[in-house]
Image (cartoon, rainbow, N blue to C red; front, side, top):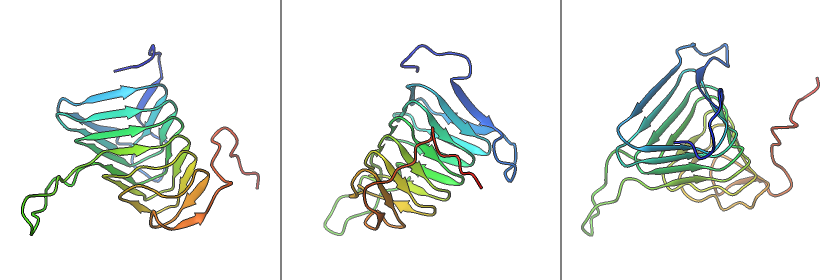
Length: 181
């Protein structure tokens, strides 16, 4: 589903971007869920998207994942505008199982994910159910998030969402991030 008027090249899936990864395109399976594109979306080669029957996935404008994104949505995942993912990232809103509680009953086994605008995730991040991030957040390579990130906007979040590497004052501006060596 497109929120705005679609145009050629607005959604690009499975194109080769990184020479270290195979150019195998993308695996896409949708068991009846809904995907909403609110603008430009690019997902690189060697990636896979799996959408459950009742799932909703919303991509904000200028979503980008370079290579090997694994997106598994069986509940609800939303990305705000200007979200970028590095290599080898997993985004998953379900455990594909529930846990039995000693006190009786079961855990739900799934929960929504909500990613703020202008977020950048380094390579190897794992974004699990219940994750919410503030706007203007950088997530360090190899970080696993599983719950709300309590850091303020303009922060770098480390290996645990409770570790703030640098609080306030920084973010990645994708329009001006060229390094001159």
